[in-house]
Every structure is written in structure tokens, then in C-alpha cells.
Image (cartoon, rainbow, N blue to C red):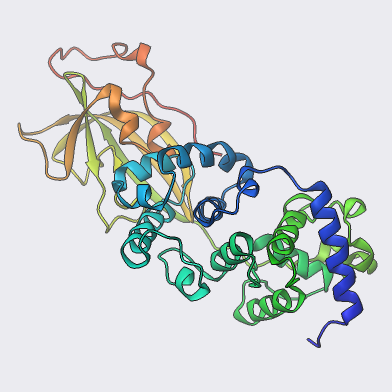
Amino acid sequence: MSPLKPRLKEALRDGLLRWYRRDRRDLPWRRTRDPYRIWVSEIMLQQTTVKTVSPRYEEFLGRFPDVKALARSSEESVLRAWAGLGYYRRARAMREAAIKIRDVHGGAFPDRYEDVLSLPGVGRYTAGAVMSIAFGKPYPLVDGNVARVFARLFALRGDLKTSAMSQRLWALAAELLDRRAPGDWNQALMELGATICLPEAPRCSACPVSRLCSARIGGSTGSYPESARRVRAEPLRVEALYVERGGRVLLWKRGDGERILKGHWGFPEIRHVDARPGKLIKTLRHSIMNHRIVLRLRYATLQGGGRPKSARWVNREKLREYLVSSLWLKCLPPRDGANSGLGGNRGTRYLFSPVGSRK
């Protein structure tokens, strides 16, 4: 792709920046230049909507207000604070990055691109976002919103996820970057994609740069970006058990070899414990990343008297302190139903109240 004409670049920058500074959404992470807080917001916003992140962002910062607080926290406390945001490896990587910042950089968030890029869980996009927004340094970025905007602006044909297209998109981002206001420019591109240049129904009449958009001019906005081949979801069947004894519930710490929810506390599966499965209660359907899960819930009787390795008895009132995934949270029985629907065994109680699947 040949270099863009200077007049086109200036027109794009002028139109988009004026629109952004006038009409941008008032989001909590836009009221700060603290690199830690901007980094937290960028990690949270990966694969998660602004609507979901906004209230959780303030809650998270209330518990972990700075790098040092995050670095000295336990993994379990971070996962609990992350509950409901999904993609939990992001939370683990954030804690690991905070420990590195504390140990290598004395607790001060690094201001060199290479140092930010070296942090666990930080890629080219996140490093560019932090450097441009927090430090005002001229680093470009490309995320899903920016890629879609570029595909329509310049009528780019092809799968946006290929290596060749990625190089092309990053080259465009670098060429268009407004070095006088890199933070505002990068945010303006993302804001355009998030609020105007939408995936299914772009609001071209409200776009500040529609007169410069190749797809709009050609009347083919709906043809861009070209659809990528969808990754087929992998089916996964889970046989889960719920055992409650004396007001305590048996939980299982999932290992690193699990296909989903590695390192999470959850209800044990039949393969985890020596138990006698009972009556089937309900079949739930749930999705996590590229897994399409069918979870069958059963009453069970734990065999033997000892606590299985990797398991823990937890007071029923404290289950939410351990169960962070919505897969398990949706299955928590209501408090007022704790004594309903029980069998005749008065020594050990077995209860599971099914709940509908995630969207």
C-alpha cells in the first residue's frame, strides 16, 4: 500500500480529533494519566465491554489502588476481584506484572516502551495504549475497533487476522499517528469503532470522517471488513457434584492441566473425587472462550472419611469468596432454599439449585 497523501492524513486527524474532544464518552479511565490505572483499564477492556468494565474498574482500584498493593496480594484475592470479567488469565498476568514492576522497577510503572512490553500479559497493543495515553509518547496501536475502522476507511480486502494484514494495519496506524497528541488520537480511533463504526450497523451519518471513507464513498460499507472464518467451538462435557456436609460445601482446586478455569476453585467433577453420583438434577449449557460446555449436575455421596487432596470444605456463606467463575456462581442455591428438597439423610445434606446458562 502506497503512503497516504499528506492532505488525507491531516483531514483524518483534524476531523477525528475534533469529534473525539467534543463528543467522547466520560469514562473513569479517561480522567487520569496514572499509567497503573490506564493499564488496569486496558487489560480489563480486552474482550469485555465498557458497560461491564466501568463499575468493576472502580471496585478493583478500591482493593488494589497501586502497583504495590496488587503485587502483595494473593492470587485468590485478585481472582475474586476479577469475578465476572472472564478470561481469568488476564488477572493472573496482571498480578505477575505488578510483582515484576515492584521487584525490577522499584514499584514505579515503567515509562519505556520495551519495559512495558516485557511485562507479563502485555502485548503490542497494550504497550502502545499505556505509552501514548499515560505518557504522551508516539506509539501506535491496533485493536479490533481500529482494525475495522481502517478496513472501511481504506477498503482493505482480506481477513484482518492474518499476519500480512496485521502488518498492514500496524503500518497504517504508525503512518496516521498524530505525534502531537498520540493519546487522544489512539483513543479517538477506538472510540469511533466502539460507538460509530459498529460491526453490524455502522452509523455512517454520524461519522466525522465519512466523507473520507472509501467504503462509504463506494456504497459498500457492509462489505467491510471481510468475514473471517469462525473458529469452531470445542464441545466439553462436565459431570459436576455438589456435596454439603454440616453447612460446609466441598470445593476442588482445579489444576494447570484442566481445559478450562485453570487454578480456580469449583465444584468437583466425578473424575476428581471418589464419590457415588446420585440423581441428575439439571443439565446446564455455558460457554467459556472457545469451549461449548454441557454441565450435568448431580447429587453425590462422598466415599471415605477424609478430605480429598486438592479439595477444601468451605462454609456455605463463604462460597462466593472462592467461586469466581459465572459457571459456578450461577449454580449457587438460594439461601432461603438451603433446607428444601433434601433427601432423608440428616447427617449429610446434598443440594444443588440449577440456574440458566450464560448468554
